[in-house]
Image (cartoon, rainbow, N blue to C red; front, side):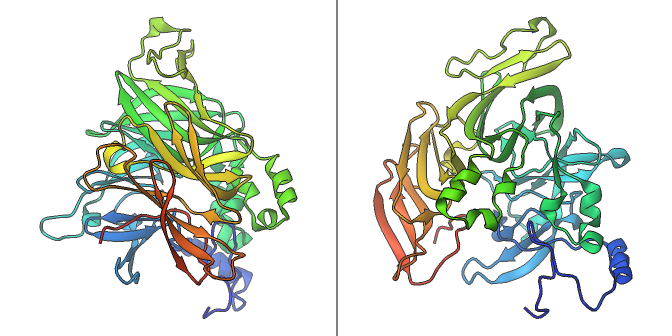
Length: 441
């Protein structure tokens, strides 16, 4: 507001150049370093006894949970070797945080680092200062990292899915100061790559050099991963093919009339909830046969003559142009463990107008929906002393932009059957959010 212009390039919006700088001074600024956004609008998570808002860059912002004031900005690059870090960390019961970020590895080759931040310290020191890299995943291409939005974690293993959606580093490095473009302009796809699954152990952190491959898809959100009798089950919200889904989310597309929005969405990748199963024990004599012996899934893994293991998924949910996205589970009890229920948004041709409950075992789905109402990611809150996995409530912020009164409200649903328990209405418009968390009072 002070400069009366956008001064930092965002994901889909380029900054306006400083009118007081000519091309030579902007070129000089380029060699001083790239200024990436600290606009932490994607998620919130705890570190120690504090809460941090985050985006997908190296900056996180400490937030006062009572006043919502921004307390301080933290540059994670000062503590660990990463260039950016995901907005979807995993939090263990003791408060230990695991996250993934890309970095330059040995000989300037690209890699992906798993970062571990310890829980609250007895001496009250900042846990971020004790952050460390525990394991490194290799990159399929030396100068083109894959876009990483989330990763999977079980009790003993880390799962990283490397998709063919690539960031062209040379474009990225020249975007801000020279070319005046944004993050989206730096994406490209590697149609021949397909999708690679990477595995590592957590403690100690060691990379497992199995070459798991499958066909190309977009991936933003893991639902859950767990171990079962020598296999790792990985449930994902996928979009078929290598074309970047974000291409369809420009406001110019979403502001069209509904029939035009649907036409545009028909050209986009098809969303599916998929289950992949990764075998841990692989023997050369098992070439050509399905290595998966779990009785409850049709997912397959076949060892090929070149040493790769080709994966085919079980499709848990798929309806034309309806995505189950922004998934949540009973995280405190079932993260990294066998589970039955997932909750998410139903994206109808990219428009979030449903709250869904998916039984990943029976494949049954339940839906909450009201006319002209657009909910946000449903957060699961377990009931005190709950015994059943779905004993709890869902919290979602719902926007009703056409309402004369109460255009937004916090919706509370019974997680068992999606019946409404209560709603807390406000007389201001609240933007549809990405992700969030709840804090017990």
